[in-house]
Length: 170
Image (cartoon, rainbow, N blue to C red; front, top):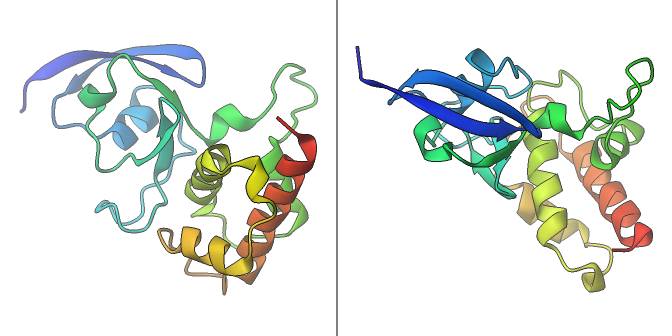
């Protein structure tokens, strides 16, 4: 058994503190200790992007970072994008809604990682850049893997999210 350490982080604005083996990945910590099972594990080698979360605003493959490395950080997962202010009426975040409107997914396994990657990409992309070209979107998506679609509907979801975020203004 490897040594343990207390890990304290904020996951979607809520404190999550638990003991974890020092070799525990952030993905496993989020799923097991924080109960945030929306982060999926695909390849566990950082290749597919399925486990992407935001750590202090930056997209990271949570299968490649140790939980102890996220100690003291703000972590955002797919669950944190939903507006839960009215428990009887959950509202999808803007990127989630764009993907739903574009019917961007089939099985949904890769959905959380692609959406979190898109959130980070749009946050880093200057509004002045305008609507992204399909080639720019496809280049961005090259770091993610979806085995079900031909990416056409995913590209449309990213395009729609970008269009809506630029029309919403800063």
